[in-house]
Image (cartoon, rainbow, N blue to C red; front, side, top):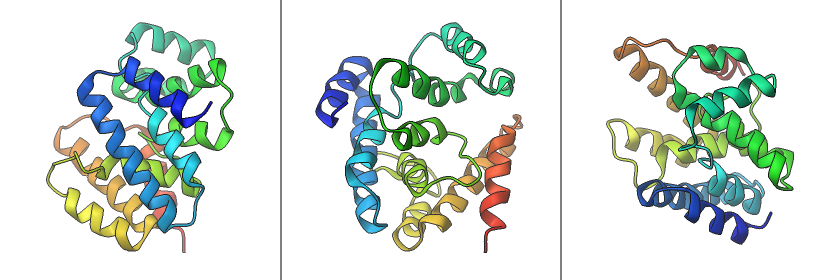
Length: 185
């Protein structure tokens, strides 16, 4: 799948506000890929497709989790988490996409221990794209400017703190990812 094909697909799939967010993620992922020496086209493609399944039917996404043998813990946490792994599965079923791109899409909400640089780029780009405006986003942008790994840790910290303040359960993979990154020398 080319970037242009992905762009057409996403423009048709997402509502305008999410489409604008996606363009911001593409812009940010491209910049981070250049800065950190990663494949720019892969970063742009993963960013364009990252929210492909965001507005799909929840029950259908839950069914994909079961059918594909994905982590069943996904069904016990907020449905907001489903679109990333389910999107990666559905895109893999329908299109010829590099595994690195699919991995970045799959991991963009929860993270994963040992994330690749491309995974990290999309994870951070999704959090700091120019249309994001929330307390702490400027700190994340500053971290991303000097260290991708520091930006991943700061993003994970901010996510965990946000979820703690809401008194909601935190998906175990997010905690595992945080632990992995802070324990990496």
